[in-house]
Amino acid sequence: MMKRISKVFKIVLRVLAGIVGVILLLSLDAWMQVNLFRKDYASLFGYSIFNVVTGSMSGTIEINDYVVVKNTQDVKIGDIVTFMSEGELITHRLVIANGDTFVTRGDANTADDFSISRGDIVGKVVLVIPKAGIWKNVISEPKVLVAIFITLLLFTLVFSTEERKYKTTTYKGDLSALKSSNKKTKKVLRTMKIGFLFKKQQEMEQMKREQEIVQKTRSSLKENANTESDSSNVQQKKIKANLEALKKWKKLI
Image (cartoon, rainbow, N blue to C red):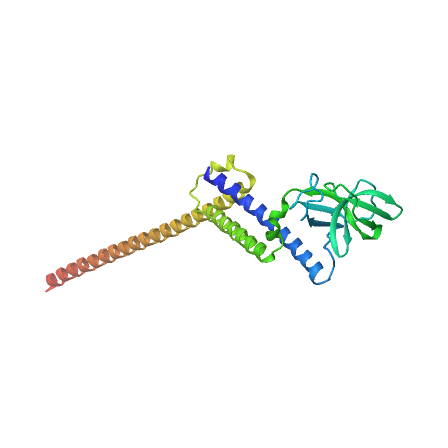
């Protein structure tokens, strides 16, 4: 059970680390576009994201909502658009069109407000993300994102290390787990089995060498014993022959 929880937690950490990493890259890209390349707004793959800070579109878009804007000037009456007016970005609905000139109005306003040209339009709102502005400080601060990303990465590395320790545990010779484990676990257990069998083979070879040495030692001792026995017999025969020769010499005297 704990192993399953650990695995789920590790997957969650990796997903969070990936999300934070993507947000970090997007945040850095947006910062570079605005601060280094001096653009009025950042754009990625033809889309921009803006934070709503007024209630002029209340009822449709609230304060602290984020809007995803498709960078296009192909718009029509009724579309909610983001446009530039006196250096500010404003998101309102188009209510009147006259050629390339439009009149806008906020859904919470009772009167028409801005008159803009098609060239002032940044794009058309295609998605509203409610209350995403509460994460503005996190998304807009690369330092915070880096800290979160490193923390999640460290947690992921810790769990990966624990998993590797588990995989390299000494194999005890039980192969029953191979039948019910998944492919990844089978591969690990198969490797452990090979290591176990190799170790057993080494032990058997060592025992065989020891037995050969013992056998050779016994054979050598036996040969020495036989040699000593043969030497003793020869010596006895020599003594007996000398005694017989001595007897014969006494008789002659």
